[in-house]
Length: 386
Image: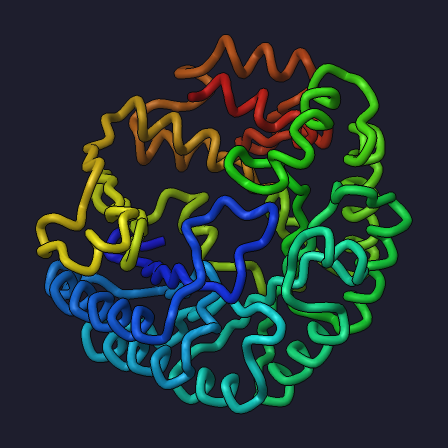
């Protein structure tokens, strides 16, 4: 990753309906508000672009919310502005998140013409009962239609999100969903466990179960830890057998299709975020935009940014460890030393030795990586570097 590389994140906070488990900054909105938001977003992009005139944009990611709830012409307008305001690398990865029932072949064709080359579809499950419990607006047939529409429009780089450890779900249920998905052969699969987040309907509904599970008891509705681990291992084996390489704890790809945008985060590259609540980190300075919609629409250019923080070397090293250990390639000690001036095995000797003695980390060929057991207990391992 070159020092002059930059990634862009474009936050579209709108969705048709907020899912029961979702704690992201998202909400439904009238068309008039969406149009005002696009106007403000474009103004922000234009105001900030000059700051990055010497940078090469290697990835763009439209996230949400559900970016595909915008009219395709609105997305095209944003893309046109980005293309005219930034130096976009010839092989840049440009992704947009899509939910089933919010995009058809015509919309995908407009995305393609606008320069978008990667689609990320939020499927979550191919079991209609599970989708209903999650509060999703689609059913499995809607996903199949959306996936095929993207293929018909010429997209050959598609990610699909899948979730495990859902209420009432068994390992057999999860296996069934994965095998249905593999029949379509998407290039990338993000497979992660449900987390019950405070402030969501799921938190109210399953809070007691989550507490029981944390204390080692058997929940009534959520899969217990043993069943959740069975799903995790089963997913790894099924995806590996199907030719998918696990390159990050929750991400699997066919050869050549690892998500370059997300790797910028994990490898501590520079990224600039635009839109409501969007985060940025450039030249070891981090900030985020306001999360208040009214404030975002009315604030001046200098009033959008909040929580501005210059990262010191201790924070930089800490992030490099817990983000780098998300990747299966782990942390290259020589690269780390070249960037931060000290090897991690010296800086964190006591914790690394402890993690190795507990068989949660290992060292080979100059790299520090998590063991399989370490992946299961990743939050515990990362905690020692925070």
